[in-house]
Image (cartoon, rainbow, N blue to C red; front, side, top):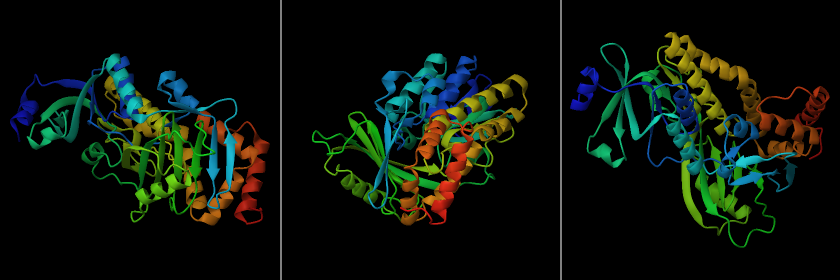
Length: 411
């Protein structure tokens, strides 16, 4: 044990926080912000230089619920183009609205800074491990500053009455606090941020998100070209470890007429495929965001669900701190799944079936021509709830889906 660890374990004057939030992405920054507003002492610990590969789409529900200012929107997507393996495509307008597009580097930093302004303390550092003091309180050990300091052996630690693990897929907080909890499968996502060329492709539209359903671009997911104002996110994802995502993105850039566009940066990271079965240790630790596995199947959407889960985690931790009852932490997952579990299950089945072959992908894009499908899909996406107010539209969609499933519909 180092001198720093020893003093933290035995010195009663060692810093104590109500909450240590590990990870400063949308989930962690939201949780830190909400808890600070409630008057809790909060430490937000985040690694330096972390940017997640992400298309950057945020729906109106997120913009409204989390009060996102217009200046963070680098583009407004007003339509989506679904591209089939045959290159046939369906353009879907977003009626009476738009999907906001953000640059994750600026967006995440704004969220962290908002948490600081609300009263949270920000520190840059890499989480190392959890331990316990003589009274059983959690001790969070971390390497402060940039990665280079790790080599010098510098370490620091603080006490925490509670911990939120928002440190991404394959969370180290989760592995420390819940080592026996079952893991989940992961998709690996990779994208390249490119500058929009001066000579744009002939059908380029900076207010349209293009989604490519093609086995050569992903055997089990999709490829995307999403507008970010002066730049674009071009990426793909797969659970197939032998598949070349870099090669797929190179092919996608060619297909989109962007092979020669200037590459500004490249990023890759694992994404969980479904929510973990357990998010808390029954005592003082709860997970949020990718650490909890809340990336939607089929769509890969994660920002809204991360922030919603971060808010619920904050409410659960506040309940724990008010009452001492750890059941508040267990209720976080229950609340989230009650609100969004049906969507996750439906999207999981959809991805498993429709993304399994190019023949099915072709039929899936064909289904997207239907206005009932388009309207119900976007209403549910924009508002983050399954719409039930149009029962006859659901009936029509059911029979149309059955026709496609049975091969009775023309492609």
